[in-house]
Image 1 (cartoon, one colour):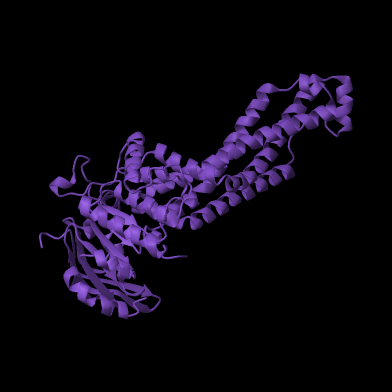
Image 2 (spheres, each protein chain N blue to C red; image 1 turned 135 degrees about the vertical axis):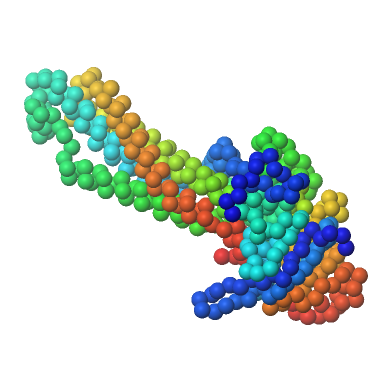
Length: 228
Length: 245
């Protein structure tokens, strides 16, 4: 039934028009109401993202800060760096083992998001069905779930990357003294933050595609089904 | 009877449950006139819900066709059905089905925005309808903060906000106590009388019969009887006598 219905067509000439797509703004409002009033739940989902991104951000920031210290080539600092097992001629480069661990952490976090969003979809079958009875199209449901998990992802990523950065700075300052704070590599840290945010965003968006699709496919009849 | 607003012709619905075939509806034909209040009665599993879903454009018949307001529902694609549900039908559910995270006002307004109305206008219309169903003082309450009867009133406001032709109410009093249930029925009846909306309810509830123009009894997927109100008075006793529950 791929017949294209003219936008101007209305019931008066015998044709039922197609329901126009409901805007992102309305979808955003529905999602936000959900996140706000299910705040505790959202926090739990977000915690996974926060921890994974904090880990990533911590690793990247530590690497940048230590390399900045190595570049200072200060005698006293070099002794201290060597005591900590850092090669002052080559600087630091994250080990493959650590990268693997990092990758696994991010993957676990993604699975966590997918899992909790799928649970949310199952819990809210009736809600989805009701919205469809009121005239929502699949695209609208897709949008609301997509926005909801993106909100979790982006808020979680922002908190996580700030957390990771703060911890990295504190640990370095503790180990190498005030020099750390005086010579923070602002530019490369900003780069790190951007990378962490991007990875966090891509990760959550990817993780939420499947649950959003499942939600959109739920049938309106489910809203009428008596007690689960 | 003038041109019916709902016309079901030889509707049958067949489900496959594993190897078993379930005839939810067998050759049902039914006309409902505009502005009528029709109660569909029948035990659970009688096909009542299936008939309901088909009329509301939520489910499609295996054979036969359903015309609502002159449109054959099976000819519509999913986007047209969404438009149809949004503009022509108001749904009321046994368990109210309000969005728990939205206030009374938001619950009603969202339905209005689906019809393409701007948010500000939608809120204004929603407030007016909530006022109409007697909840003008509960606009900012969440569903969990009001009683069951009030939740069902919010749901009725939501069903009415887009000025539908038909209200489909599935056991609207099923989760309410006797007195609140009566108030909800009275409210539906008032909407029918004042706004000329066709009301169709699926029910077990004997209280609903007194204000129905027609009572359709359905069993094992077939219509057993269609009784007009004037004939109903005489038979109430006997219906009461049966344990339809």
